[in-house]
Length: 132
Image 1 (cartoon, rainbow, N blue to C red):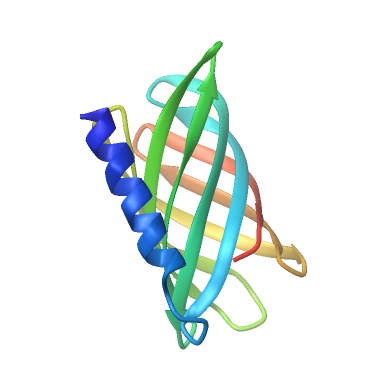
Image 2: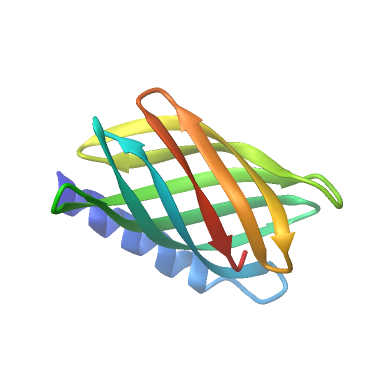
């Protein structure tokens, strides 16, 4: 099941990369520290955000590094950018054959850099995004 998930995440990312420039907000990366699937660790991921009128959809994938091991994950987020303020929304994180819904909020701290937090059942993370 994990390999199917990785294939889905790669396909979603590839479709996002193929979006036209008029729709695209762009490629982004993020690094988080959090707890997922019962372990604390670091998330390193990438995604491609596209949208219009303040709304965006961001498919992405990455790796969760914990206790000397690693695990692939994928995610899909839908967010709204409050003008000159926060980006808020909801997402779903797929890992270890489980889907975990979460809420997300990101606050810009520099151009193209934001402090981001995610929280949901059995999942919490905080970190930085660069891009989107």
